[in-house]
Image (cartoon, rainbow, N blue to C red; front, side):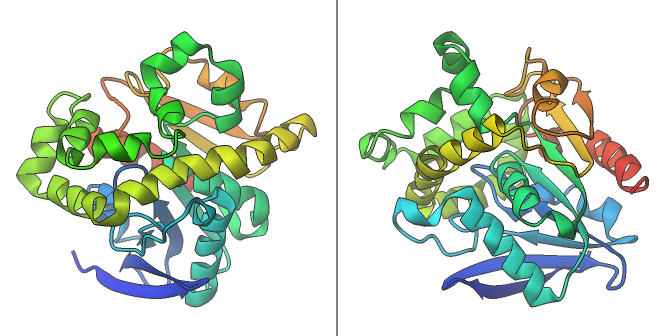
Length: 290
């Protein structure tokens, strides 16, 4: 599969993206999550590239992109602006946007600020951040979202994680049977780890901290004003992932006006790496209706 590698600058930050597929095809942009990179989409690309033009960036703080210091660089609306600048750089007007985890949160911010550019959205394994902080109990958070609290404490996570980056990432990917072994066998885990120890740890912690400091108050305001995303959204989540047991569709109905969704059975949080064939099938069905 022919994939071309590129870099561009967004507000002084050097960002990586890869491109493959049909030059004049409908455009799909895929945004990875934490603690991954654009490589997370490798299983989907063969099924998309013969029909579509595919762009897979590394968001700031991740993968091959710059990892600026300080929390002020990582609110989701700045990261959405990076994506907007990429579309200007490439001369893109309209596209389908797919995001997993933190990438889905950037995609949500993009949809609220640049809705005119979007044909459709796909959010993978997320519910709105304000719902997590405001509606989940401490018991709920302790099971799936404990790191959303722990990451906020300045210096603590860095102190405990430095020197233990590999063990930490292994614990993340080892929640889904066989996934860690597969990532190591392919060499993908090594790529994720390299980025994590080369500035990614601090950057990704700052991602969570700035989300809490800047994004959360903004989303609370939008919620109180009952402002919803009107673009069609496909929701995908793993049966045993972060949304296990949550009324996903009911939650999102309060934040978006045109949603459809599918729970991927026998799957954890890293949906596109665990059940790529089913994700691809469901995503293509959604895209073909746009």
